[in-house]
Amino acid sequence: MGEFNEKKATCGTVCLKYLLFTYNCCFWLAGLAVMAVGIWTLALKSDYISLLASSTYLATAYILVVAGVVVMVTGVLGCCATFKERRNLLRLYFILLLIIFLLEIIAGILAYVYYQQLNTELKENLKDTMVKRYHQSGHEGVSSAVDKLQ
Image (cartoon, rainbow, N blue to C red; front, side):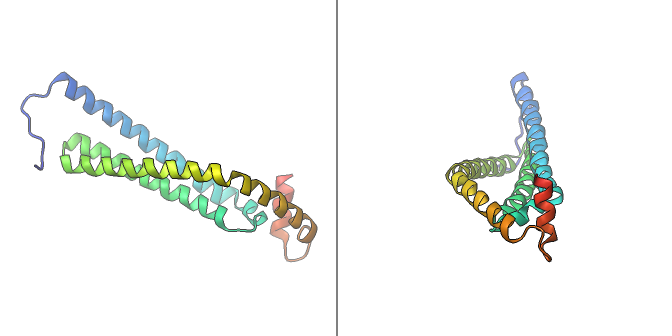
């Protein structure tokens, strides 16, 4: 039950093997892109986080980084499972893909549900920030973020 031993590899199985390998390479690149967006948000856009009241939005940048790493690991696992032709690795790969798919559905639903809440909170916090913390001593980071936003 460990390895897949078949003496003759047909043209269809060879094509499927390379097609799955190509898909996993694209999957790995997509994970790299998601991780890069998370790191870009943390590195270059972290000033804007100070304009928001809750730290939930900072957590989304970390979630992007973690999700990118998980997708990249899954892509590498898929490549290894494809070339080694191990059924257990392929099963693990399928389970990880299923979990990622379910998490994407949940994230899409949450983004749709909380979009309006984010919009109103951002408007209210920007008003509050402009009145209370803009160009005040001790709040130079907020002043810089508002200046960059404008």
